[in-house]
Length: 198
Picture 1 (cartoon, rainbow, N blue to C red):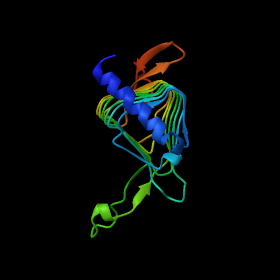
Picture 2 (cartoon, rainbow, N blue to C red):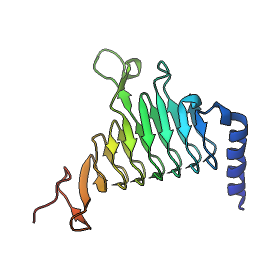
Picture 3 (cartoon, rainbow, N blue to C red):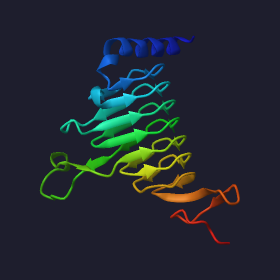
Protein backbone atom coordinates (compact mmCIF):
# COMPACT_ATOMS: atom_id res chain seq x y z
CA UNK A 1 0.00 0.00 0.00
CA UNK A 2 1.40 3.40 -1.02
CA UNK A 3 1.90 6.09 1.67
CA UNK A 4 -1.01 8.10 0.25
CA UNK A 5 -3.38 5.12 0.30
CA UNK A 6 -2.23 4.25 3.80
CA UNK A 7 -2.95 7.81 4.95
CA UNK A 8 -6.39 7.73 3.32
CA UNK A 9 -7.20 4.37 4.89
CA UNK A 10 -6.11 5.60 8.33
CA UNK A 11 -8.17 8.79 7.91
CA UNK A 12 -11.37 6.96 6.95
CA UNK A 13 -10.89 4.39 9.71
CA UNK A 14 -10.41 7.10 12.33
CA UNK A 15 -13.47 9.00 11.11
CA UNK A 16 -15.57 5.85 11.43
CA UNK A 17 -14.27 5.13 14.94
CA UNK A 18 -14.76 8.66 16.23
CA UNK A 19 -17.87 9.77 14.36
CA UNK A 20 -19.49 6.73 12.72
CA UNK A 21 -22.33 6.58 15.22
CA UNK A 22 -23.25 10.21 14.64
CA UNK A 23 -24.43 9.42 11.09
CA UNK A 24 -28.00 8.46 10.30
CA UNK A 25 -26.31 5.41 8.79
CA UNK A 26 -22.76 4.65 7.70
CA UNK A 27 -22.75 1.34 5.87
CA UNK A 28 -20.33 -1.53 5.93
CA UNK A 29 -17.16 -0.94 3.95
CA UNK A 30 -17.96 2.74 3.32
CA UNK A 31 -15.08 5.18 3.60
CA UNK A 32 -15.04 8.96 3.91
CA UNK A 33 -11.49 10.25 3.44
CA UNK A 34 -10.40 13.59 4.94
CA UNK A 35 -13.69 15.43 4.33
CA UNK A 36 -13.76 19.19 3.81
CA UNK A 37 -16.67 19.24 6.25
CA UNK A 38 -19.71 17.29 7.38
CA UNK A 39 -22.77 19.07 8.74
CA UNK A 40 -25.70 17.27 10.36
CA UNK A 41 -24.34 13.72 9.99
CA UNK A 42 -27.47 12.47 11.76
CA UNK A 43 -29.38 13.42 8.58
CA UNK A 44 -26.86 11.70 6.27
CA UNK A 45 -27.50 8.06 5.29
CA UNK A 46 -24.67 6.27 3.49
CA UNK A 47 -25.16 2.68 2.33
CA UNK A 48 -22.50 -0.05 2.01
CA UNK A 49 -19.31 0.16 -0.07
CA UNK A 50 -19.41 3.90 -0.70
CA UNK A 51 -16.13 5.74 -1.26
CA UNK A 52 -15.93 9.50 -0.74
CA UNK A 53 -12.59 10.96 -1.82
CA UNK A 54 -10.68 13.66 0.09
CA UNK A 55 -11.87 17.23 0.54
CA UNK A 56 -15.52 16.58 -0.24
CA UNK A 57 -18.16 18.32 1.85
CA UNK A 58 -21.47 16.75 2.90
CA UNK A 59 -24.01 19.18 4.29
CA UNK A 60 -27.62 19.00 5.41
CA UNK A 61 -29.12 22.32 6.37
CA UNK A 62 -30.67 22.28 9.83
CA UNK A 63 -34.27 23.24 9.11
CA UNK A 64 -36.65 21.48 11.49
CA UNK A 65 -34.91 18.16 10.80
CA UNK A 66 -36.47 18.13 7.32
CA UNK A 67 -33.30 17.77 5.29
CA UNK A 68 -31.87 14.41 4.27
CA UNK A 69 -28.97 13.18 2.16
CA UNK A 70 -28.97 9.57 0.93
CA UNK A 71 -26.01 7.96 -0.84
CA UNK A 72 -26.79 4.43 -2.02
CA UNK A 73 -24.62 1.34 -2.22
CA UNK A 74 -21.42 1.37 -4.27
CA UNK A 75 -21.21 5.10 -5.06
CA UNK A 76 -17.79 6.61 -5.76
CA UNK A 77 -17.60 10.33 -5.02
CA UNK A 78 -14.62 12.33 -6.34
CA UNK A 79 -12.45 14.95 -4.67
CA UNK A 80 -13.68 18.46 -3.93
CA UNK A 81 -17.37 17.55 -4.35
CA UNK A 82 -19.98 19.53 -2.42
CA UNK A 83 -23.31 17.82 -1.75
CA UNK A 84 -25.82 20.04 0.04
CA UNK A 85 -29.38 19.12 1.02
CA UNK A 86 -32.02 21.49 2.31
CA UNK A 87 -34.93 19.14 1.61
CA UNK A 88 -33.82 15.88 -0.03
CA UNK A 89 -30.84 14.87 -2.13
CA UNK A 90 -30.36 11.23 -3.10
CA UNK A 91 -27.77 9.37 -5.13
CA UNK A 92 -28.76 5.94 -6.47
CA UNK A 93 -26.57 2.86 -6.53
CA UNK A 94 -23.15 3.06 -8.18
CA UNK A 95 -23.28 6.74 -9.03
CA UNK A 96 -19.81 7.96 -10.04
CA UNK A 97 -18.74 11.59 -9.74
CA UNK A 98 -15.53 13.19 -10.96
CA UNK A 99 -13.73 15.95 -9.07
CA UNK A 100 -15.32 19.32 -8.33
CA UNK A 101 -18.98 18.27 -8.67
CA UNK A 102 -21.70 20.30 -6.92
CA UNK A 103 -25.07 18.70 -6.14
CA UNK A 104 -27.86 20.45 -4.22
CA UNK A 105 -31.60 21.00 -3.98
CA UNK A 106 -31.44 24.72 -3.24
CA UNK A 107 -30.04 28.07 -4.27
CA UNK A 108 -29.72 31.56 -2.83
CA UNK A 109 -32.73 33.80 -3.33
CA UNK A 110 -31.96 37.12 -5.02
CA UNK A 111 -35.40 38.73 -5.28
CA UNK A 112 -34.55 41.75 -3.10
CA UNK A 113 -32.14 43.91 -5.11
CA UNK A 114 -31.46 46.12 -2.06
CA UNK A 115 -30.13 43.24 0.05
CA UNK A 116 -26.87 41.36 -0.43
CA UNK A 117 -27.57 37.90 -1.77
CA UNK A 118 -25.72 36.33 1.17
CA UNK A 119 -28.26 38.00 3.48
CA UNK A 120 -31.28 36.65 1.60
CA UNK A 121 -32.89 33.30 2.40
CA UNK A 122 -31.88 29.99 0.91
CA UNK A 123 -34.50 28.96 -1.62
CA UNK A 124 -35.75 25.36 -1.71
CA UNK A 125 -35.91 23.81 -5.18
CA UNK A 126 -37.34 20.42 -6.10
CA UNK A 127 -35.88 17.20 -4.78
CA UNK A 128 -32.57 16.36 -6.40
CA UNK A 129 -32.08 12.70 -7.29
CA UNK A 130 -29.36 10.99 -9.31
CA UNK A 131 -30.36 7.63 -10.81
CA UNK A 132 -28.48 4.35 -10.48
CA UNK A 133 -25.33 3.99 -12.52
CA UNK A 134 -25.06 7.63 -13.60
CA UNK A 135 -21.70 9.29 -14.18
CA UNK A 136 -21.28 13.00 -13.43
CA UNK A 137 -18.23 14.63 -15.02
CA UNK A 138 -15.63 17.07 -13.74
CA UNK A 139 -16.98 20.38 -12.35
CA UNK A 140 -20.59 19.60 -13.26
CA UNK A 141 -23.41 21.25 -11.29
CA UNK A 142 -26.75 19.57 -10.53
CA UNK A 143 -29.46 21.37 -8.58
CA UNK A 144 -33.21 20.90 -8.21
CA UNK A 145 -33.33 18.17 -10.85
CA UNK A 146 -33.97 14.45 -11.16
CA UNK A 147 -31.49 12.62 -13.38
CA UNK A 148 -32.40 9.15 -14.62
CA UNK A 149 -30.35 5.98 -14.42
CA UNK A 150 -27.22 5.31 -16.49
CA UNK A 151 -26.86 8.89 -17.68
CA UNK A 152 -23.65 10.71 -18.59
CA UNK A 153 -23.40 14.32 -17.44
CA UNK A 154 -20.44 15.84 -19.27
CA UNK A 155 -17.71 17.90 -17.62
CA UNK A 156 -18.71 21.48 -16.78
CA UNK A 157 -22.40 20.83 -17.46
CA UNK A 158 -25.23 22.47 -15.51
CA UNK A 159 -28.36 20.41 -14.90
CA UNK A 160 -31.41 22.17 -13.45
CA UNK A 161 -34.15 20.25 -15.35
CA UNK A 162 -35.15 16.60 -15.14
CA UNK A 163 -33.23 14.26 -17.43
CA UNK A 164 -34.63 10.90 -18.64
CA UNK A 165 -32.86 7.56 -18.25
CA UNK A 166 -29.87 6.75 -20.46
CA UNK A 167 -29.18 10.29 -21.64
CA UNK A 168 -25.97 12.18 -22.41
CA UNK A 169 -26.04 15.82 -21.31
CA UNK A 170 -23.61 18.60 -22.25
CA UNK A 171 -23.66 22.33 -21.49
CA UNK A 172 -26.79 23.67 -19.83
CA UNK A 173 -29.57 21.03 -19.74
CA UNK A 174 -28.75 20.01 -23.32
CA UNK A 175 -29.37 16.35 -24.13
CA UNK A 176 -27.32 15.27 -27.16
CA UNK A 177 -27.79 11.51 -27.13
CA UNK A 178 -30.17 8.96 -25.64
CA UNK A 179 -30.48 5.19 -25.69
CA UNK A 180 -33.28 3.99 -27.97
CA UNK A 181 -34.74 0.73 -26.66
CA UNK A 182 -36.41 0.07 -30.04
CA UNK A 183 -33.21 0.12 -32.11
CA UNK A 184 -31.10 -0.92 -29.11
CA UNK A 185 -28.58 1.79 -29.85
CA UNK A 186 -27.51 5.24 -28.67
CA UNK A 187 -29.02 7.89 -30.96
CA UNK A 188 -28.51 11.62 -31.38
CA UNK A 189 -31.34 13.78 -30.08
CA UNK A 190 -32.63 17.31 -30.15
CA UNK A 191 -31.63 19.32 -27.09
CA UNK A 192 -34.89 18.39 -25.34
CA UNK A 193 -34.12 14.66 -25.71
CA UNK A 194 -36.45 13.96 -28.66
CA UNK A 195 -34.88 11.67 -31.24
CA UNK A 196 -33.78 13.28 -34.49
CA UNK A 197 -36.04 12.27 -37.38
CA UNK A 198 -33.41 12.19 -40.14
